[in-house]
Structures are given as structure tokens and as C-alpha cells.
Image (cartoon, rainbow, N blue to C red; front, side):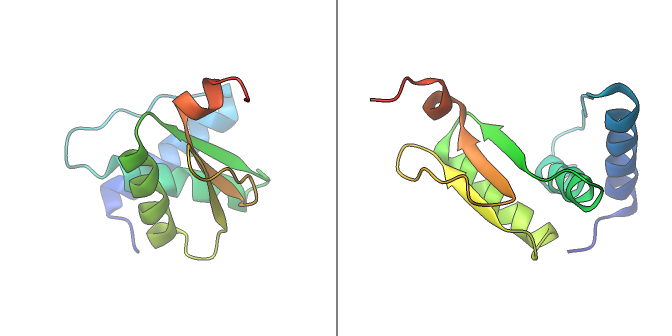
Length: 106
């Protein structure tokens, strides 16, 4: 998937801010493609020295959506899921549920 020019600019600004400050907050309006842009940011970080990443969501549906869209942008990157039903950290990027990670192991 090829990002739109404004999405590419957003990704570049976020990656630059992360390198300069160690953190950033990307804000975009409804319909801008935030999940696609997040996928672009994580993909760029993986290309430039980051070994692994974890993308957190608060709902199962968002975990699935994030994983699917990430693979559209980064088809050659391995992914895994850590949620109530699947617990794997094997991928270069793991899509996880906040609630699952915050629970104590039983």
C-alpha cells in the first residue's frame, strides 16, 4: 500500500520527533488514516534499527484491525497477537490488548 502524501508527511514528522525527543503524539482527524499512518511509523522504525514493537489497543476489534492494516502497509514484517485467546510475542510487531497485559497471570 502506498501512503498518500499527507500520510507520508505525518509518518516522517512522527519518526523525526521520536528520534529527537524519544516520544511523540500524532493527532489527525477522523478519516485521515491514523491506523495506516501508525503502521507507516512502526514500519519505518523497524527499518531503522528498532528490533521489535508492541502496538496496544483497548478492544479485540482494534487489535485485529491494527494487525490487518499493518500488514497491508508492511507485508514483509512478521506480526503476532497477545490477547485473551492468543499469547504470542514471536512477531517483529506484536498487537496486544491493554487489559490482557495488565492482568496478573493465572
